[in-house]
Image (cartoon, rainbow, N blue to C red; front, side):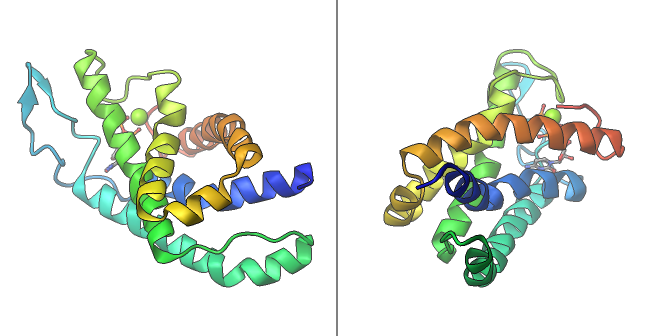
Length: 181
Ligand code: CTP
Ligand code: MG
């Protein structure tokens, strides 16, 4: 596969995992998942992880996966490169997994004494990738293993932190997020 094709596949296949956390920022507020409970004197997750944000984020990622599936034949023909479609289980795995990865990161942040909104370099940029790919491989193993080939995976791991930094700086600049990470 030529390099541009690999990059196109990597970005396309990860879009349902990139969108959920940004949708959650727009939808946030309401009841925290942890119900305000603490563990060892710190919140289990904190007020930044809400039920509404998680549900809306997951729905947004899954919805995008369905839209991309419908667009795949047309966009593939335009690019001259076959882009993947998303079975529902794959879209759900990527979207919900991205949210779970972010929730897992909040759990680790609270355990390491970081306040809500504190940065945790490395984890902030890759938590949702690890969550998305793990959930996708559990829910849709064949699709995940054939879509995320070695070269595609390398591009995902290199490009995602860059995309994450850019989108968060933009969201911060637009006043949608309290911190630029
Ligand atoms: N959000 C949400 N539910 C989620 C994830 C995010 O409601 N599962 C919303 C919250 O309003 C949150 C905002 O999106 O404040 C930004 O998300 P994020 O940066 O992940 O949360 P933080 O507030 O920084 O909290 P934490 O330190 O726990 O990551
Ligand atoms: Mg944050």
